Length: 575
Image 1 (tube, rainbow, N blue to C red):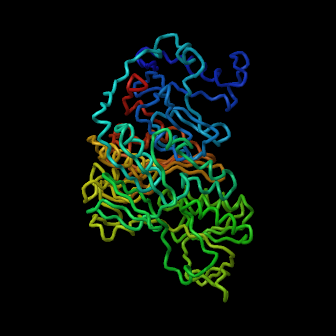
Image 2 (cartoon, rainbow, N blue to C red; image 1 turned 90 degrees about the vertical axis):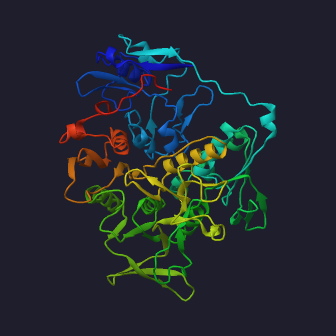
Image 3 (cartoon, one colour; image 1 turned 90 degrees about the horizontal axis):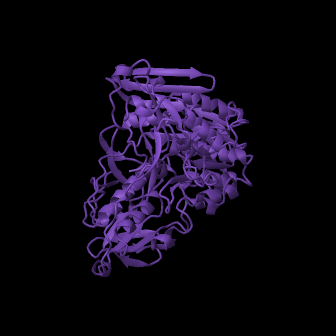
């Protein structure tokens, strides 16, 4: 297999590689007519200066364990099965910027319209990548490397079929299924799910706004199960697990056995203690495809909407409903929106944006009572300060909790979620758990906690699958404090703590009309970062926080550094 090899010591900083990339991806395809000021003509690579002012060329490594792929909730970022390259389907891209958040080399960026991501495509169709063709020093070269060969399965192994059962068909469940199939071509893999379709919950807002149909929410591809030889049984709500008999039971009376079981049932919405909330006919949550479809139908008749909760889900619903012509008000009991992800300054920019689009924002208050008529139709919301807001429809976006209601008699150890070890094993042999349903070691805090984000679910599912198939894999910890978002065209990525825990921490900020950047650190260790507007370099700071890299030599100028100051990339772009 051929890959790009980077030799930084040969780079002279001429930037021919960048110019060639811009030409190759421009509309004119000619260096003589290339408009360097046109943001659409952006390079997919870069040349950066390290701490010693030495230039280093950067181009996508098409990493073997590509974080951009595992973090993508839409399926737009994928590894091509034939070439092994990490490619990007712009038509499938949701513009969520999770890939930008996850790339430590700053090689994925929003396009000029801020709608979809742009990354290296390896110049497929050309004999060699254009950056390699135009490098005059040999700092970039195109070379053949040997691929590792896997043992061929024997017929004897083929006869020993393990029966794998996976409950849940979202990020963790399908990552587990794919990992099992890679290691065990002959095992019987079955995925059951309460949902009728495979879809990304991160994209439910697009159902409400009309930006996508339900088939376009499939992040795995329509041929995933057929291509992997996996049986998918939809519409099965699990009601009980019997570890002694290795049996799973569902609501409709169906049952099945297993040799190895993964529980990846995710989480369910939490309803706050608000009087009459559970009685109102027009009260909804947003967790499933059916929820999104019910909201879409209801808002056609009920245009005044109140959303309880100003976090990510609540604001995504608010933006989507605004696009449908609804009059929306968001109520957040914290002092500002997105209190878990952003500081007050970054949140204030979103508050201004939402208000400018006609969305009402109420912070520092909470709903006390839902007013209903005699037929339980929603009339309005009473606030704890005695204020009153009339409405026709309520969406509750006040958080989630693990779906473990069916495990009460199993003996499986639980806290807030299912307790697992580094192999994703539960306290019962042959039963594993992954995703929002389980608790895992969180890297930033150093504590075992829930880690309800997409990249964590994928990583946990893959480790579970490898161990279920007989491999010895460990997940030392998960970095759960990372978020990417975009509302009304303003993108933001945040890592770690949005505010310093106390006065012993130092803060650096860079503020301009279109950009806000902030880092928080103590004793040379970064613990928080916010990038709003301009996302350049955001992924680098996520890597520095995750790896607990010592940045003490650059305090006071951290926001002007780049990854070459700290990270040592491999010369070969793919292992």
